[in-house]
Image (cartoon, rainbow, N blue to C red; front, side):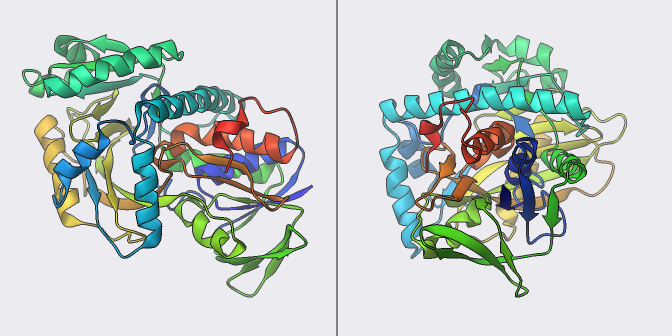
Length: 414
């Protein structure tokens, strides 16, 4: 079957790989000149299955209200005359109950564990190199209340099959000695030794090359204008240059832009962009930088070592499709980075970036068929696109191929 994948981010390329492995003839279309150039380009780099917790939880509203109007807040909601934003926000509040939070965690962990296994198999089969490290992820806490809140979460994750150790402040420093500078401020942490880190952009490029070697065709520099339908099916994709491409099945993996393409077809996805920021610091040989991937829970920042670079990423800004850099938010990230790691000694200019994460209200992605029999979606992964990409791609390929899925697809049905 001829399958067209719209979007060449990490989720789209993973979908293309598994579709090709299932025997389909695959074409990938993307407006960028190469794979992984938007949301997958400079994210937090964590494969964080054992910390796959949704933003929507019983204490979320209190946090958001505390951060309102703070330009450097970890989560900033900019009120707009945007019906999609308000609908998403109301839906988000409905996901904040304890029952919904637990259900969403279970869905994320199930797909995350499957996805991490898929990633490990791919890495071994293809010999992929993307500055990966298998040293686990350490969440550290400098506020007693937040640390105590993390303890029952660790228990929940452990019951769901994740190894998540509660560790003391001294154990945090033993796991990652670069935290010694703030050792007296630490109150504890949680450590997940089975989680990983790595450059999602490098992975996407490497997997795209492997896809091409398998016969997948990539159409870069091709913006997708619209989808054409007939008789309850999608028959073609119209591109910006006037080209029209046909296929037997279509997969929309356009991240935050997926709802915009599908809305004219009457397919409404509860996906809204959450802008995240990152800085990438080139490191000198003697830089006192962390090696274990870290999460600073109080500031909602992650730190991941990528070879001779340190990626620091985080925060969420709900401001529509605006990708401009906000100086106050970037300055806050840099200030916290040098507060925690004063001995970094950059070896060059710090790179700054912002990208749009496609978020659903409960953080559970949407994977599967739509009201059109040959139209599928794979989007809505929020901050977990890199964590869930490979498993989502395989699940999507199983559904397109009418095979028995390796995970229960009902949790992710659009």
